[in-house]
Image 1 (spheres, rainbow over the protein chains, first blue to last red):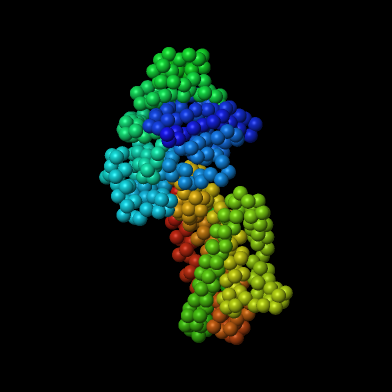
Image 2: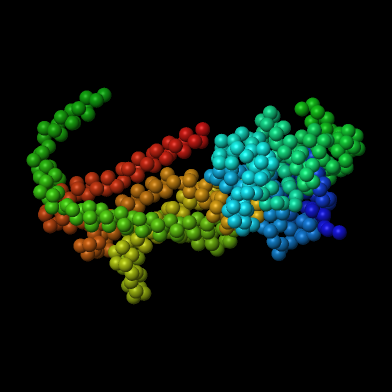
Length: 246
Length: 249
């Protein structure tokens, strides 16, 4: 039996005096798509960023395929190549063309030669439907296209799992669909995904499980239909009502 | 409004001793005598001193900037102390220290004569200024860039080299060019190091001709030489700044 992609054990995180994560434990299984929901400030982005150690947890541990990424002697850079990350602000490298964006980590981290890296970059760009943009600079692309390139860039590392930190929150409404479509295809292809999002439709249709967080704890979790249609907790109900009014 | 200005101008034109001015500052014979050495030796040396000092200063400045941003406290303290010290001292003091102070104290000379001593002295000073510029450039790159690079598995050094620094340098090309112009002018301080006929830069060259001919014309000539070197650069800075401004919008 192989270790689960992500196993979080009693995770605590303080920012100064403020405890933003107050004992989070959960396991993401292979091929599972999990959506993290909750009001802003609930700690869901912080939790996601702890998973690849962009944030340093205060206590607790996170096992990536059985290896503790929070331990002192962890090979953090090595583990990160197995964890794709997609940001709210895309964070493409503006001084590089799309092709170079997709190639640079393959070359410098995985030590692939240029031909191989180019081939993989072209493949992943085709997968997100942007083959014709290969020589453009990111600033020439729409937000939706930039985010799709960012997804392709993460996929070039052949990650075992993907983290999405509000991937559509910075997009104009008409551009959200194209990014969600790419994510849906990725989920159908069996990628393990942990997604912080406010897109309830996506959570309902694509997620195997949703986790509702508030004030640094998991309030409830389960299949999206149960949690979203028939929430058990007062805080979940209140959040879902607020979203609907929106 | 312009009345006073016109009056002063007319007064100057009438009362100035034009013959004396022409003889002292625009003596054609002395000008002719200065060529070609003012170009082939003096201007060339000014450019060579500047280039070498700039290259040394840049490398050292990059190291200082990274130290100042380091999470290791002693590095930060060292960089901060260095930058404050050499920005606070007159450049001339540093040049004299490198040229005469160190040989006096330790009995060894920096190799390469005026070029070696001058470039190192000026480089030490320039590094202090450029370090602050480079640090500001690195900090102007959005945080998300480092996060994206690290989340792809890049080490801090790899991310800095291929992602952060290329963007930082693009941001700071205008201020760095300004510092280059200041450095060109500061090479005039190297006269204190003494020189052989072959190692004179523009200012020293002009002073020697002035002393020999008892005439101020060499000043005019080298002033024009300095401007020929610096004006295109300042023009370039203005263009780059305007371009950067346009891109922001």
